[in-house]
Length: 391
Image (cartoon, rainbow, N blue to C red; front, side, top):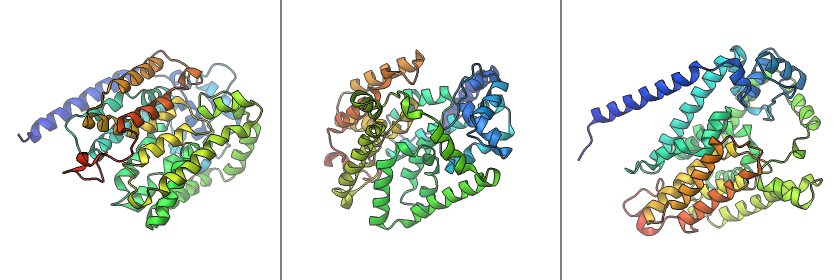
């Protein structure tokens, strides 16, 4: 039976009204002080510095700006993102902390909604609507609560998956947000370069390069000395001395805390594995099939990452969900993993807590279980379906 378009339109209106009501109730109570309690404040403070041609990595200046907005204590919140995509922060320099936070949260919610909707399309528009569980994905909720920017990275990946064949130049351009946290994508990026070279999809590389150059040019117009300032900040900080609940950091602290190079060994191993994984599958490589496992491994071997960075794993988690449902596998393991992770978020467990060490291995274990250890769907699942979108 064909669904009435008016029923779909009415449902969309109800969802939109509910979204606006909940958002309105939430943002009405926000203040500048609320902005300082989230990671968002580091992006806003950087934007304030940029529009005035000042150094967004100046600890003393950032602290003064954040304290003026209501930050308590003497420890500034500063972004460690490289300058390549600072154009995302520039608009925040023209608004106050409260206004900036409201706009930022609305953009995050909109970005998450678009990403979830497009993942549903990439799954082949199934009737089960499992994709709506993405709104309860614990890392994404953690990202929203902290005002972090990983939703934009998620959206960039999903748009790349959607546009990679039809509009390669645009598919490369939408990957620009991923440059804000390149350490999360190194194995993924290496395979992408190999895929571009082997398939001669140079327009995709050109799109990313054009977006990157445009972003750098826009940012350098405001702060020409940004790159030397970034290098000086990284030399002066001791970010590698802090424990971060990541497998790479845990490995280093267990072996030799003072040997920082140990922290990058898993990343090197992950890159070697990624090259092998792609090369043995290059003739039949499909990002919607093979790219999901590659994405999880890229985050698992990152030299450092926080729980909210796992937001970018939503495509792989949903891929496993649909694969498990189609093959008759139990969804209970995912329910248990998601529930425990959600409890940690709602209990406001600090993102630096070692209690988050288990999450990436858990998402990886779920994906391997859901797919039966194979990156390709079974033949019977492919019949009558478009293999380019079936997971």
